[in-house]
Structure formats: C-alpha cells, structure tokens
Length: 141
Image (cartoon, rainbow, N blue to C red; front, side, top):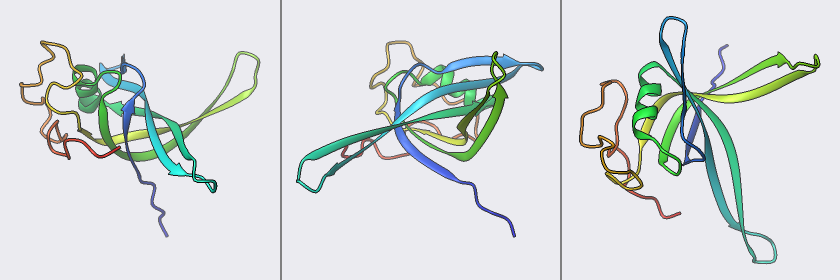
C-alpha cells in the first residue's frame, strides 16, 4: 500500500527567495513561509500563532519565485514533505523538514507589494505553473 505525502499551505514569505543554480544549471529557490492561525483561548482572549515553513522550489517554479515573489508576498503552495539529514562540523546529526513545492499560486493583487518594473504584466514563462490571479484576491485574515 502506498501512502500520501501532500502539503497545502497559504501564507506570506518571510524573506526574499534565495535562488541558486546547481550543476547542470538547475534552478532551486528556497524561502520561509509564515502561516498564521488566530483563535480564542479558553478565557476568550484572542491568540495569534505563527508557524514557519521552509519551502523549496525547483526549475521553472524556482525562476518564477525569484522573479515575482518578495518578502510579504501572499502565496498558495502545494507539495510534499521531505526530511533531509547531515552531520554538522562537530559530527552532530542535524535534520530539516522542507516542503518541496510542485504548485505555486501567487495571491497578491496585481502589483500589490511589488515595486515598479517587476514585470507582473508579462506572461509567466512556464505554462505548467499557475500564475498570479488564479486564486482568490485576498482571504479575510
């Protein structure tokens, strides 16, 4: 029996995407994504809880992220969880769990939060990646 490894997130970028090119000119972009939950505790006091997620995008999606996303951008990301491990300089095993994104939808209104000349009026370079404007303009939180 096969399992399901699927993650769906909507949140704001905590920093500019970090773009790198690996051997063979393969693009990879990494960024932190904040998801915030607002609820009332048992005393009725409003509580805001923010979770931070590490998102990794490859190839065309990485290039889209680098070109169009900025700190604070509201995005919808679908992907899968991937945990990797390594030994640090002291030989201590470290772990990181990341979301490997395979679908990205930019949810900011056209031009919102973007500087002039960001190219939001140009078509996306990848037809298989959803582009800005395909999701709700703004959700109520």
